[in-house]
Length: 484
Image (tube, rainbow, N blue to C red):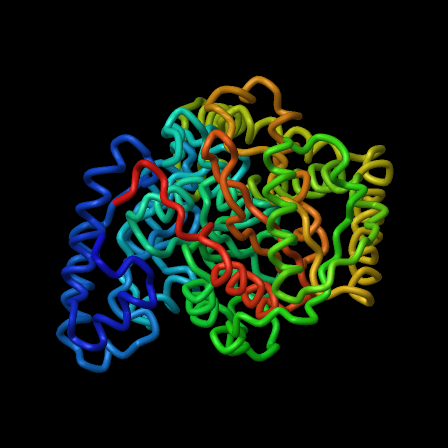
């Protein structure tokens, strides 16, 4: 992009007149044109609209003082943008153009950001590799034969490759944190209710949260400060005041109590990931943090619980795609036949699988045995964290049990694909904030991520820990072979 690689540096240069928003936008668009044919991180590039927006920022002296003035931003393709194709990377929404902006888009625009495009993702955010996109997978900038993770893989790849300094994703079971780890960037899932979901195409409404991908904790703090806060258009948002996240970036984690559930790390984690995780814990300890062994007794049930409740909610949410109101409609002789053909042709295999599972667990005779029981265990998982937080401030695990795997490697084995989220789904089940922080490279030079989970609405502590690690290590400055 430009000499100023991070969002806060770009914004400072634009505010001071050392750089124009138009030049920053042009550099981002040039990087996309050069790199995206290989990475396919973008689903739609808004070159003309972005350039016009950047010129408008340059022309307004007050706009240049906004929190994200002139900063190029990419948006996951399941977040509505008025007048711009938004498909959730599904054929059933191919060509759909929303008539309104999501709340996060409105807030980014008011903060001076320049939205340059919509990013590739798994269809309706259902996946862990971006291979479920109806328009082809995104690729990892560290190794283009490997996945960038999912479902927000395009956003992660866009930031990791330097095409943009900031991207938004959504996280239902790890869809920000897992691709952040696999691409070597920072990914933050806020507390449920911290960021408005208005205008986010729903997957599982009691899990979904929008959050940022960045290369630094400072940038994540700045973005969260802009998009967080109560929204009267989303009844699940809370009126808890938005913290001064940037003020938390002191570099000081002395006395921070870090809980480590070692019983979860005894199998299924690649040795390279274990070593990177232990190095990150050593750095936190050296910085003054206190490590404590803890137990999360019901964590091993989290994947099963997540895929029961999440799919049940998906089955309900995706019932609206019937060919009547918007999106694709298949020709047919009767309404019933039109419903069936539209959904059969419009949805991909993974989405159909999840709808069928969700419909089954909600059906008469199975509701109590599966859905209700899963909700009861979900409560136990939240109580485990409540108990842990009486002793510690954050819980630490690897973000992903493996580094980025090869495209196609798990395509025929959905269970192995689902296990990519084994460490991330619990935060969504419990509604807690969680962050993935770069913590080094494997022997094959693939990124690893450290996940920290905190108490509700304590994103400041997560960002403080990320900032401390950035100051002590060079992990966040590592760059992939493909970098703008």
